Image (cartoon, rainbow, N blue to C red; front, side, top):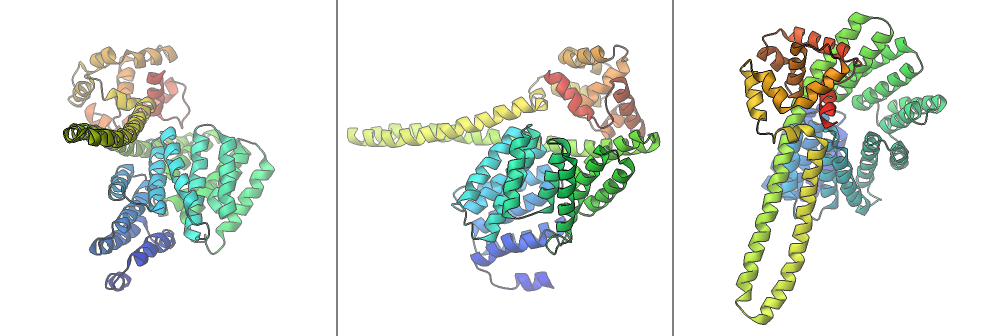
Length: 475
């Protein structure tokens, strides 16, 4: 009934802005992600009808945000790319800032921290231009500060991270930021009394009107509190709190929180000497990690294709401008001088943008070694050999990538050929389900094999094998 009433009215651009910014923020904690995505699509249709391109772009950015939080990075990037294409000529600082902030979130979840900080800096510059008397503008800047603190922790700059958390708190007190400050005093500037104080403050904020129904923030606060209890040796209490966090995270479909909690439970049950529960949550975390890694790899491919396309467009534009210069030169000497000066300034600007694009591509290639693997001419052939269960799969892999096996044998010289072949398939990015299919093994047996590989390599239960093997290759 609400939608029928909504879409039967006539709307102005200001009405659409209010819906996409104010109303969207309210609905974020009251309806599911899927319902909010459908709602934004409805607003986008109205924006298209009245030819309001910036409203269309804002709707796509809102949808991207929901997919990013659901850990569906591929769809998040697809909608962000749509928003960016539409808004290229926009002068709307709020819109451009939001798009950059969401790109920062995507690259953070891909663990490309330099890119995340770069896009976050752009978002912050736009946010600082906004009207501070407008509540939505202030909340946007709070969001930028809050997410920047997360990125700072990832690049081992906790002192800078805590500064941005306090900047965020100064704009608007938020349970998530308060709980992250408590986390800071749990693991970095270790002060248990300060951590306990901030956790009490976070739980108090969760009971206020603005946050009482916010299950996502409740899940985060409980997750952080669980790790605090674990650091204090209160394992039983920590287990109960983390399980409550998982329930709230499941209700709002936040896989990243669920994954971290599974890993924490596996570690806690190990400390408690409960090997059955330890293995249960270890297997849950491995299965969920495989799913998230598969989606992340797809998003990385999409991101690189996008950057390559932009680079090619820049080169074509430069070529066209050079041709234009030749055409103008035929008119007169005076016109040649004027046009040459004009084009020189434009070409310098374009070249600067082209260099930035190439720098971004270089950083992605440097930080994500699996992207470099795809440039290897043997890579696709090795993948195909594995899929077809060919006997020369492992010899070919050793020939192309000798570093991995050599380093693994340094850790444990008793690793069998079967163990090394299994590690190779993990390194190539195959999920547990795919490995089970290609080596004719039950899916559960694959999980067990992963567990045994960790034991042979003396790895902790929470260690992600895919990232561990990739780090060996980088070394």
